[in-house]
Image (cartoon, rainbow, N blue to C red; front, side, top):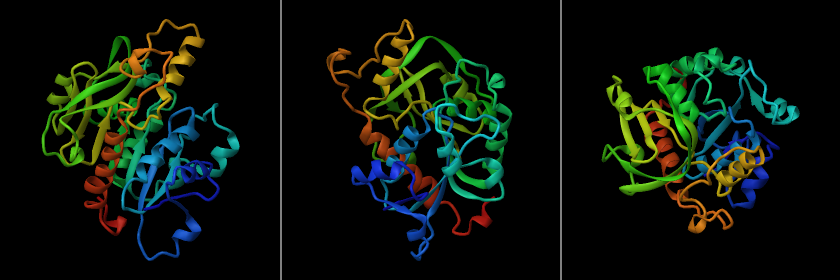
Length: 305
């Protein structure tokens, strides 16, 4: 089923080339169906790339989805053309009176900073508080997962001795949970981060459940007991070349960094990456949309409490 996106959004052409069905709003309004309203708070510097990655995953369900793109008002990205932000993005002030079935908050390259030193931290805290009252289920990715765990549950983050960088194996901690329905007992997912949260802190937090964990990468997925707050510490949305591009970028900056593990064929950076996480990434997003959004959110979003 289609993802409803703003007319003329650049992602539409890329997705069409992958046979992913998108629909402009003008066409959608003539269909007698209420699409799920999903907001994406895009904190990544390369916003257009992230738009494509997330819409690719959101499209992999039988549900019609209307996407609203959000940016922070207190900080403006320097890596995305201003005309793109002006044409396709709103701020929380523009939508604060609205309610949404779901919200995705992306990662951001600020993880080495204490949360309180992030320029838009006060605004982000306000958005996360707003989401509790105006969004049925919120999916937090990578740094946003750490930020959400800290803000909502008081779970701290800790610096790592070296970057968690590569594709790691994970295990299901809580069997028969709807979010992980259809997952294999062990499954891969990419990580790219300099900080972590600890299992014992997540398990000690009241109202929070650990769903998936990695012996090497640590906590991967946690959720509030009611399923309205989901925290994913990795990057299941990453493209085949995302880790490679980060590696090349960091090498170009003169950084002393090892190649991403379990990623290149034969662990040789001179060879092509092998995508092993795509199936579970699609399943994660389709399960979230189905079990935590579509089957739970009220038809009239005005009834959302």
